[in-house]
Image 1 (cartoon, rainbow, N blue to C red):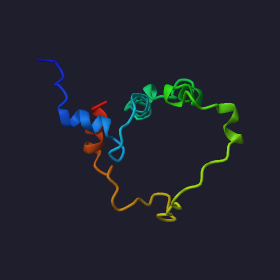
Image 2 (image 1 turned 90 degrees about the vertical axis):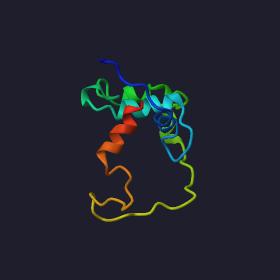
Image 3 (image 1 turned 180 degrees about the vertical axis):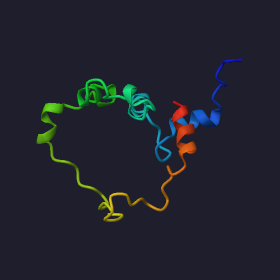
Length: 108
């Protein structure tokens, strides 16, 4: 009593394969978890702002002072504009179900 149940194998797999079936590194998972923390006061960046996020291990190879001098890579496919309304959402938005999102975030 009082103990959290063990995560099922399926829940663990969801945590690893969060983005389109691609494997997500530990640093990426920690970054996502930090940015999506339920309590805004505990979210990554809530203490020292962008610097806290920039210092996260996920970004360790980024040379921040030189980033504005870089030329961004070309996109293979042009971005599709979904709508003119700022609140327009794609019809197949997979995060409409708060419960589903909550379950995925709980696996972290």
